[in-house]
Length: 183
View 1 (cartoon, rainbow, N blue to C red):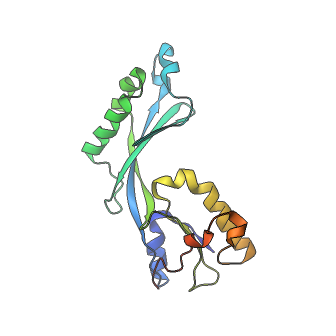
View 2: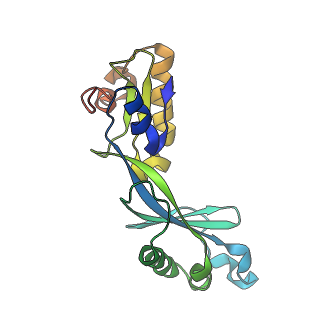
View 3: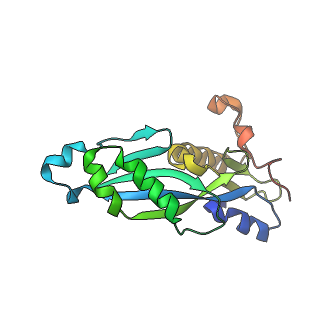
């Protein structure tokens, strides 16, 4: 069984008598529909991913998705007005066309599962030989998802807790749940 339940992983593990140090970080995103822009402004919108220090911009079909900062607010996914405004202000600096559409773009929040040390928790648990965890990328989930999936698939396929360093070129055992949570 692979448990990859995001921010809800600690609750499910708690039901099994396990503590997993994952915390829900509320992340803010806005989606700008570029079809609302004038045809002459279409070229002003990004065509590929752009990363600023605290703003990530990704083109998804007819939308430009703006992803930014996070906060700790329990399991609430309701945007705070001041942070929603901050996201809109940051996005307006991208282009004049974006500045026109950002004030009315819908803002949504989701929970990013963040581990206490910032590294994913991935591997077999000591307490249950058939339970594997894959959780905790926080704001790096979109960058680490494919690699985390490959790791956990290999571990489950091999039936091992953690593959050797030779398999991956790095110390994969550092991602293991062993020693990072408490039964």
